[in-house]
Length: 286
Image (cartoon, rainbow, N blue to C red; front, side):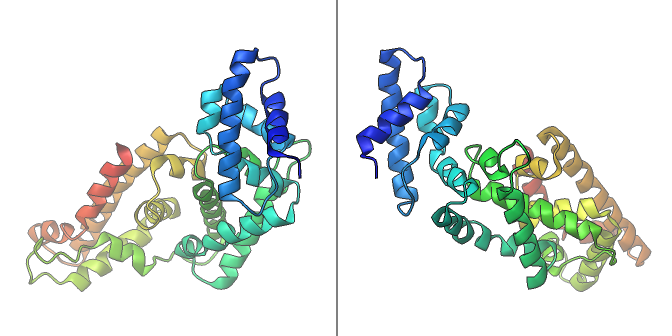
């Protein structure tokens, strides 16, 4: 293995090409910070090399910026893209093996989870002609585990959209929308009846709206993450969620009316559409 001081100078030469001597001193300190983080995060892997340093340089134009990026994620991604077996094993163990619960929220079943996981692995590691692996492009732009989960959820949602079976609503989503706080509404109100109404209202929403609710309420994703999944700006995702909230309440009220509830009973019942929905929207949109 190349001695650490020599490796530091190699990385400084790659990142700091053309910099004056006084700036290279600060850069050297930032490189040392990143080497230490890589060693702590991935003791099983070799030290970062010139290929990793090239990506570091793209993510950070100054020594201060270099010290703040998630250089350890870039290092892992860079090695994975080059087929390093130890790095690939870490990718599977730390990230791909943990996305099953998120995928199951979209559609349960081990076969579906395995299919999505395999597709995600290929998406992350197979580079387009003349380009880089998606994993390298993602690394350094946020928590790598969260970014991988976004790719997995997008893949799962696309596969579910292509499924020709009828719309379904999982119990977890209904439970997330219907409050269990008995102090909010009259005790005489039939909660099971309200839950059935909410389930019917959810089925009447379009698939994207149901998926948005799953991402918001069950996966607790923010608007930036939701925007990445659908390839839209965060402001667009925010507008979708605001309109979805109105549609959900309107559709639930309509279903309750069809079930014979009076307007007064409908108002009481809608209090069961959990206050967590309002809190969740406030959290997302601030």
